[in-house]
Structure formats: structure tokens, C-alpha cells
Length: 418
Image 1 (cartoon, helix red, strand yellow):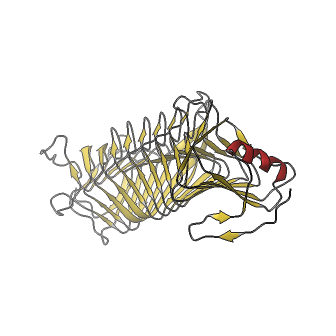
Image 2 (tube, one colour; image 1 turned 90 degrees about the vertical axis):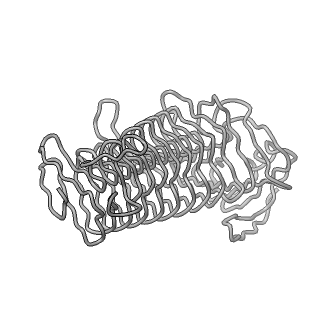
Image 3 (cartoon, rainbow, N blue to C red; image 1 turned 180 degrees about the vertical axis):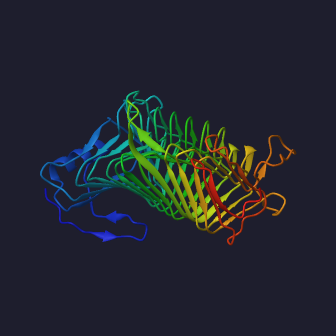
């Protein structure tokens, strides 16, 4: 039976349409396989918690531009999968909208809970949750909650308690685009990079709102990692994340194949928002730039983070950090560079990096509680073993203080203290 389409847009981004008939979710999904029409918009209401078979393919032969809203009726409803596999495989020409619904995965699963292929789209609104899933495939194992090859827009909701044996405990962006306007990504883990979000394969991540918090990565980027692509932060908060190595909040580096060939470079641009209260066991409590990665800071606040080298930001050899505005304050380094630790290239033409003695919210170098190290670069510590040129800034470097250092050559300029 063919249905007439009724399209409308709501303030929260939910698209309404025709209610799909059926007594169970499986029956409704089966109805769509037969009856969905090109350009159609359909609402699949779930009125009770249900368990469905894995690998539900939202794909319709010779039909496209189909929008499906999966919505809890009479309250938030939980959908679980009976066996290992992805719950939903969203294919080209299909948009899946999650509204007042919880997708619950499997702790020892092998695949991402939702897989968005190229040409497909996923949208999360307030009340939607993706949780409790592990992408445990030893060969791929990325994107515990969502694997994005198409387009993913998060207007609200929660992605929590997911894990990946490789990258992207919450979300892995592999050549697609992820736009985060709101919602929360929390409590996810990755055995490699990007506890909350990971970007690979020329992917794009744009964060304009929401919170990424309490995630953990075994390698780099407790909150987010960009290895091959672009991460632009215009707003929102990345806080309370942890990395067992580098970049408690954000990690920007390159991606290599199995032979070590560089496939692409990760670029992190911060134009707003806050990175705070993150911890790295090695470099860059707030942000770590490594292996040819790039960090551009136009605005925003990096504060209260803890790392061994670079409480706020760490810039390793063959990388670059450019700062034209923003504030780096109140961070703690164990060895050097309370605000910024530099091995690579660093240029500051604006913004503020606070010092310890010169500012009550200053960055500090402290190897143990109550003990403040001296001559360790409270503001910036720049060094390189090749050039053997070391520079330090201990006092606050305000908007009018320019600093430049290139580790490879040892060239420097600006108002360094030592």
C-alpha cells in the first residue's frame, strides 16, 4: 500500500512523516523494504523495549532520498541486538533519525553499533542514546558506537559506554563528516586513538556545541584524535578525558599504513570552546601535536589540564602550533612547559599564555604536589636536541607578546625571558 507523504520540520531537527504499520520493530522494518518510496519520510514508532536481529540494512533497491525516524512512543524505548554485528547498516540515499530511543549494543561485539556508509546520513536528537557496544574486530575494530563514512549530525543525545579495539571508542569518522551541535559523548574507550572521537581517511569533524568528557585512549587523544583529516572546534567542551600516552583532550598527528608510509596529516583548528581538566600520562595534557600534525588556535580556552611535558599543549618535532588568539592558563606540567612544551615549530602572534609567578591563574611546572620546579618554562619551554637551542618564557605572555621558535633550525624571535 502506498502512502501519501506529509513532510514537516520541527525545532529540534526531527522530521515527521507517515507512521509505518506493524506490531513489532522487525515487522515495521520489513514493511519499509517493500513499501518505502523515493523521497519518502517515515516514522517508525517503538512502544516497548525490543530485541532485533543484527545487521538491519536500511537500503532500498532503486529508491533513494528516504528518511526514517526511529522514535520511542510513550517514553524512551530500548532496542538491543540478539547477536554480534551492527544493529543498523545505513546505506546510500537513506537518512536515519534517532529520537527518544536507546540503541543498546553488546559488550563483546565485533562491529560498530551503527554503520553509516558513504551517501547515507545519521541524525541524533535529544533523548537518543547509543550505548554499551564494543567494536572488537581485531582487523578493523573502530567506532564502538558509530562508524561514519557518510554524514552524522549530533544535535543532542548521548553516546556513552562504548569501546573500540582500535580507534574511536564513541565515534570513528572514516572519510565522512561528523557535525556535533549538542549532546554528550562520554565514558567511551579506545585501545588506540580517540577515546571519544577519532578522525581518519580525510574525515571531517566540526564541533560547535556539546560535551566530550570522561573518555579514555590507550595511545593518543582521550577526548578526540585527528590523524588524517580535519577537526574544527568552534564551541563546546572537551573535559575530564584521559590518555595513557599523549593528548588528554585532543591528539593531532598523521596516519600511516602497515609499511609506515604516511597516508595523511591531521589538522586541529580551535576557534572557540573549552579544553579543560584532561590528563595525559606523557605529553600534552590538553592538546598534543605529534608526527607532523598541525594545531591552529584562533580562539578558545585551554585550562586546568595535566601532562608530563606541556600541561596545556605539547608540540613534538616535525609538527607546528600557531596561536593568534585564545587563552592557555592554569595547566600543570610534570617536567617542562606548564603552558606549552615545544620541540617542533611554534608561533604566537596573539592570545595569552599565563606564567606562574606573574598570574594568579598561571601555568606551572610541578613534579609533586606543593613543589614548584624552577627554570622549566611555566609559560613556554622550547628545546630541540638537534639545534641545542633552548628558550624559556616564565612570565605571562599576553596578546602583545610575540614568540617564535623552530626546533629543527634553532631559530627564534620575540620576547623570551631566557
